[in-house]
Length: 66
Image (cartoon, rainbow, N blue to C red; front, side, top):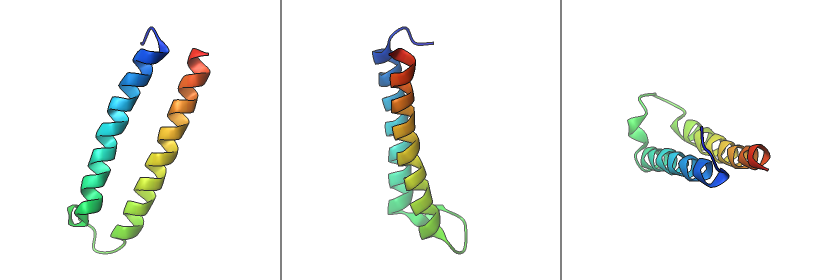
């Protein structure tokens, strides 16, 4: 539990940055994905889902701490 919005935000951003780096790594080297077809679709969905979740979490943080 975070006492302030800033503590929660900083923690959230650290986790978001970590996930973003993992997605970037996979985007640069799609062979990491062990699926025969659909790698581009999977990466596109992963990126879009990540961006939407990031925005949702930041907005939710505003709701909790305001």
